[in-house]
Length: 81
Image 1 (cartoon, rainbow, N blue to C red):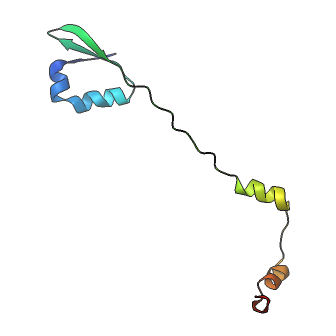
Image 2 (image 1 turned 120 degrees about the vertical axis):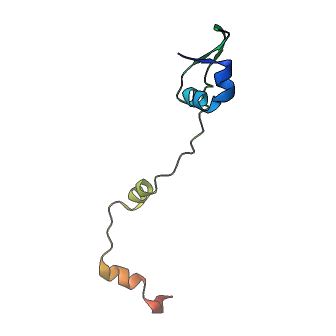
Image 3 (image 1 turned 135 degrees about the vertical axis):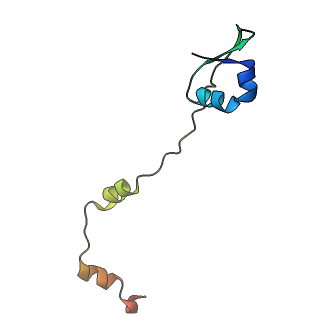
C-alpha cells in the first residue's frame, strides 16, 4: 500500500493517479496520521458484441468447395450479365 500526504495529493496528483490506475491502494496522511484511503474503482466490464464467424458459416454452407479457374471464368462472362 502506498502512502501520500495531502500536500502530495495537491502538488503531484498525476503520480498518485498512476498508482491508482495500476491498482494500488493509497493511504492519505495529514500531519503524519492516516485519515483516508483511496481505493481504485472497480472496472466496469464492457459488453462484448459477439462477432459472427463468417468463415465457419461459409464452410457449413459450402464445405470445402473449391472453384476451378474455368468455372470462375464462366461465372464472370460479360455476356451473362
